[in-house]
Length: 144
Image (cartoon, rainbow, N blue to C red; front, top):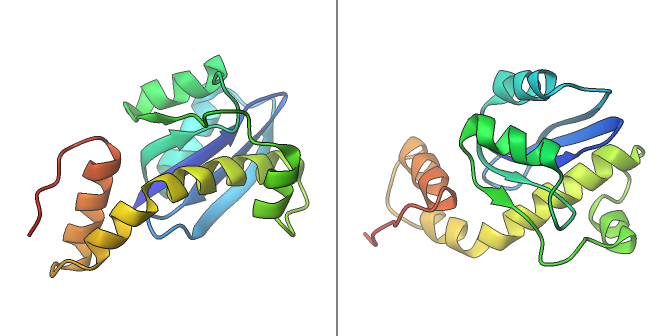
């Protein structure tokens, strides 16, 4: 499964994994997590198409995770406000998981229109998923 991964780096590292339909697949918080631990959590679920952060500039920790997967990094134009994170992550209890979720949702929204166009193509589910992954990874996708 291809993923949109949001990471909130810090002493407590939050992560949120969305599928390419923008649906939450997994989220959580790891205390004093190493790069290796976060890479394993992500790898156990799928392959990241993009790694997202909620701050600009991105933390070194998030850059390293993206580099480990050779995945592009989604960085918002400006830091996502607490109010917006609360709105996006309504109902989420942990602030670190919520911030990671907000980063992943912002990344999904950035690609959403193009992903929906692929959904409208006359292709099988696996082919659509692969096309979405390639599109997010920056590959040119031809029209059917």
